Amino acid sequence: MTMRLDLKPRPQTSPDDPLGLRPRRVHEAEGLGRRAFALFQATRHPGPLVWILPAHSPARPLPAGLPDGVSERLLLLTPQSETDLLWAVEECLRAAPVGFVIAEPEKPLSLTAGRRLQLAAEAGRTPGLLLIRQDAGSNATETRWACKAVAGHQDSTLHQWSRIKNKTGTLGTWTVNWHGASAAFDMVSTAAERHQPADPPG
Image (cartoon, rainbow, N blue to C red; front, side, top):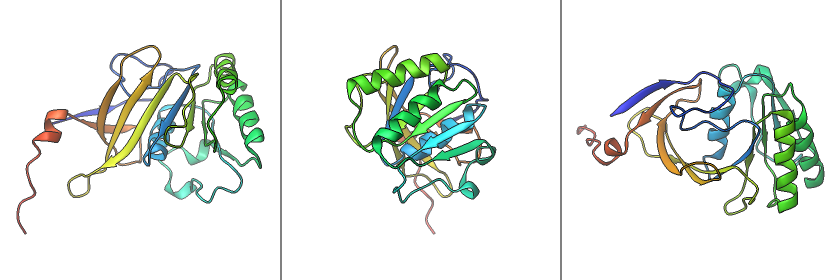
């Protein structure tokens, strides 16, 4: 069973928005599916988007492959050092016109650095999402998500997004059928995951 949801960009999360990120907070995503999760969140936050990653990173978002409406709003920053990257994240979070900040630090954040980013997010009223390596999270982060792709049927694109840390709410796992083009997606129930019928023979 699937439930169709079309969650428009909204300034804050609500009970019917289990995948929302609280504003004025910095969040984290880890796992091989973290970039898909970041792009999904980018479709749901209005206003300018800033993506910050190291200058030597071989993987960069390509405008032609981004969801609808994202490339037109995206500013890509490529600092030379980790220090410059964290400075850019902090400044962008403080910039009120910015709607959403995505960053890819290479090293785990110190508690001091994590708190500085939280204060910057509060000052600019801007949510941030750090795409981190496995087990490289910060204690200061509001939520942390474990993200991976899961097997689907035929042309379906299934993602499993688990909230494994939450300072102010519950944890949980959601399997989402999202094609990567807009904020619309199907939520797949746990029961459906267990009882999906096998594909018919040839």
